[in-house]
Length: 107
Picture 1 (cartoon, rainbow, N blue to C red):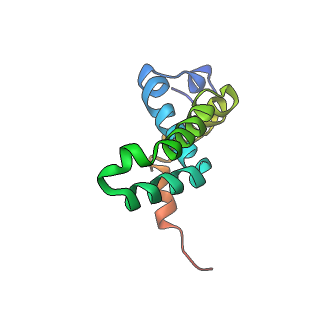
Picture 2: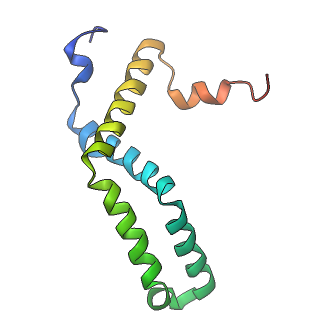
C-alpha cells in the first residue's frame, strides 16, 4: 500500500476485531486505575473468599471497563492511534514500542 492512499485507512478483520480492542482494553485499564487497584487490593486481602468479598469492587471495575468498551468516541480514538502506529511502522519498519525503548532517558 502506498502512503497517502485510501488503503491506509482500511482495516483488516484481525485489526478491527483483535488489535484495536486489545488497545482499548489496555487503555481502559489505565483509565479505570482506581477500580483496578481497589479490586486488586480486595483480592489480595481476601484470599479464597475474594469471590464473595470483592463483589462490589468487581462490579465497579466491570462497569468502568464496559463504559469505555461501549464508547464509540473511545473506539475511534484507539482506531486513529492504531492507524498512526501502523503507518509509522510501514514507514520505518520499526515497531513503536522498540523505538520508544531506544530513546534516551535523560537529555
